[in-house]
Length: 126
Image 1 (tube, helix red, strand yellow):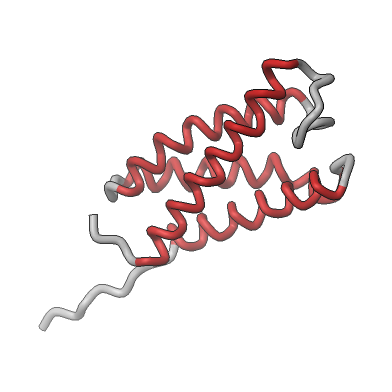
Image 2: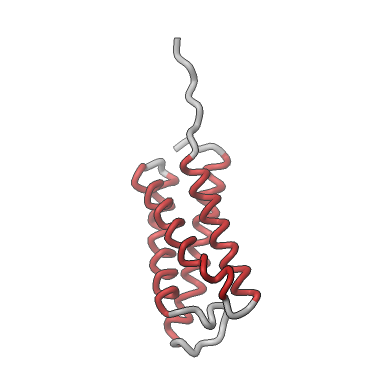
């Protein structure tokens, strides 16, 4: 599909955020709630949701890259869900690193959603 540079960038950022969600949550899920790491102190439901959003995000990115409407809408829904899950961490994360990660999650969600929802001007036909 022929995407603009901004749309391609948003999809790539979505893929990176999805991979980050998978790589950040799966080790903590496998080791249990007392596991040390970047996701230490995160509620179990957030870890499970991050893993799910990460895996589903890779599927949605494939569809969005190919220009499929389902891929674009699934990407928007997943980024909204991820941003909402990260929102409490902006204020209540147990450490500054957690606050920074949560803030980045919210900002990434906003960026991807805005880019994918914006209308591209179509050429005028006479």
